[in-house]
Length: 433
Image: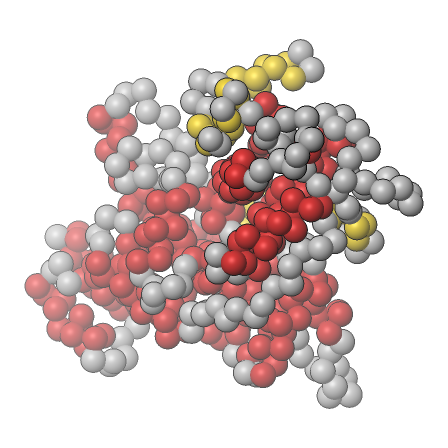
């Protein structure tokens, strides 16, 4: 029996004579009680790499799947124990796991993810002396129970016999899909539609889920700064702290920055005001995106579920980001002075830095897709058009509340040209009265 239970909100751990908060970290259990060393591994990853907290639960799931499999194995005759201990695991058990899961119809990618986590655990156990001379991470010719290969490009160790990934097509939302998703978000919910549309817009600019949910109010430019960016035709940059504590900048148009400012000064301000009236002890967390109900930070899983509801089947917020990465690659692509395509390596290095991508060469498929569709010629105009469409949807939703403005809403719906400035002027005029 292998399972895990997360620590509660009050949990704290001692390390080097200091006390650290440790909420929501999985603790693993087996038939003997706490499965100590894997639990310490999960705790160590969570505390040392807070940016991968969302991944720790996945690591726990991976370890459970593997060790549940180990529990089913019979030990050979003459073995010291009736069951394998975690310290008994060798390359042979890794290969047996692959064979078992492939027979169950599991994809190699799924199997590889699990064994990557399991190898990471055993490497950590070797480095922290829970096992000795068990994992081959010593640059010598000795034979070890678990093999390891050193990757010069990433300066890291991996298990050398991971099954090769079969090709698996993953749908990427088109511009039409995303436009429909933005409209659906705004028109189906007066409460959180605008918020969800803004989160999707950040995904399109390559923000990861946690990147988006960590952005703070003070990072969004003031209206004066946005007007200045508009006049000088400059891109607005928002700094985010991504995976592995790497800082990078998300680039958004002034039009999209204005949508953020409108949301902060409008719907978000109303949420904070309402929650403060109901709860005098409430403290604004300072994040751009907060819960409509109680003003707390948003739950990442909840947001993923909401975003998926706006998209076609089998698409998710992560696939929106994949399209965003294709756009980023396209933005750095082009031709040199002689009319030749820019060097692939140069394009990928610049795109990887902008997208917070660890391995630039893994972006080659995005570049191939971009060049095949001549994407670089369209990406900048599409970004601005998307921000304007988002603004149009929000304003159309607002004016339908007023009978006097119904003709304008109908005109917009039929595709007639009406400027956003004119709509805002008329709307402000009615609200003043």
